[in-house]
Amino acid sequence: MFAKEVYVRRRETLLAKMREAGQSGLILFIGNTEAPAQYKDNYYKWRQESCWLYYFGLDEPLMAATLDIDSGAETLYADDVDIDDIIWMGPQPSVRSKADSTGVEHSAPYGAVGNAVALACKSGRAVHFLPPTRYFNTMKLAALLPGAAPSEALIKAVVSMRLIKEDIEIEALDHACDLGIEMHSVARDAIRLGIVEQEIVGKMEGVALAKGWGAAFPTILTQHGETLHNHGHAAIIEPGKLLVVDAGVESNEHYASDFTRTYPTSGKFTTKQREIYQIVYECNELAYSLCKPGITYREVHLATARKMLESLSALGLVHGDLEEMLAAGIAGLFQPHGLGHNMGLDVHDMEDLGENLVGYDPDQTRATQLGLRSLRMARRLCPGHVITDEPGIYFIPALIEKFKKEGLGGNFVNYAKLEGYYDFGGIRLEDDILITPEGARRLGHGRLPISPEDVEAAMAR
Ligand code: GLY
Image (cartoon, rainbow, N blue to C red; front, side, top):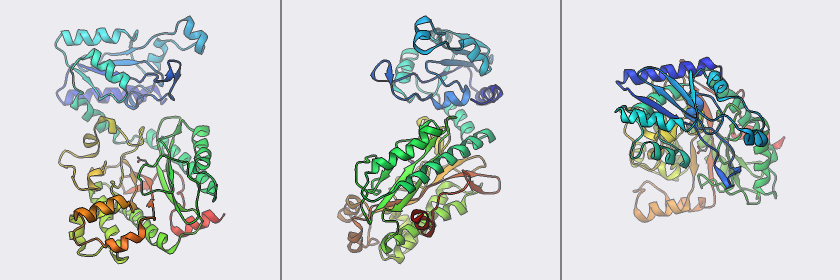
């Protein structure tokens, strides 16, 4: 938890933004509760709701709060422990002291939040709330405010704050990235022919658990990198394959990191692998070099797509006019995802608040084209934005076949040559980037080896 003043200031800012937007009434926040896995007392790993963490910092279940936009009054709703709780989990600080630790003036039992909401509704006051992620909170909100919709004004105010990371958050993100780099280094050093992928996952996630809250999202470690989110880890590491490792650490402060590297399982790239790897590497570097305040991330995505098509054309996998290929969305055949996403307390920061409200400026419309339509962060870059830079090239036989059958690739795609890549897999290379007033910097101290030469050298050690 940061200092109390951080949360007090953030809530004051939020209230001011809501007033500036002409809003009145109550803001209702609901924290997460524990989610039972098999039975009530055996629950999934605890994780607090991110907006709650941002505005209150209290990392405990079953809490709610109201902020009164008109009077500025703030109330924390939570229950003090009873003797049964003390027997089960030991003595706990009082709710009053928890409220003090985050600078909230009033406190009340958890159940009283229902009365506060009911009273506001009865008086004709608006109750603003964010879209819930967990089912418990969905049901709680449905019971408190039947039929009510999340508040777009509140979403916009929250997004405007969380998108621009404060210095203390950047420090926390650097730390999460340092842990992510350590986790990936352990993974790289553990690659051995003949072992099960799961052994590597266990070792790398050990770092995440030993030094942080755990993995920031389910680790992707696969020799079938052409499947973007392959979470199976049962395969044996085979010679001559490419191993995609996409993973990050959530720090104890709950900030995320998210890196991807792709390794030749035998320690050296084949010529064919290296040709494609070099393209992805150059796209990663190009994206980083373009990142600076003023450019949109959509423009950066399109610049890397152009570069990718140009290089694939040099290999004879596509042919034709570059601009026409770009306009026809041919890059989506090879990279059917966006260049990156926002990152912060969530690895895909705030996507639960609505991808378009988070990742798109009001004057931007989301594309419908394969690849570009999956761009989760398209905004004009500003200092304080934290984004991922993660180009990839994938040879997905089913997608190539679909393009061929339905003529989606026009005359641009060399299907005969692509058949030689059906067992290639995929390559993705990802770094985490902070936009600064001058341009950008990669988060974390140091960088995981990424050039093909450096990757081979690191694997030889
Ligand atoms: N790195 C995993 C993801 O972006 O979903």
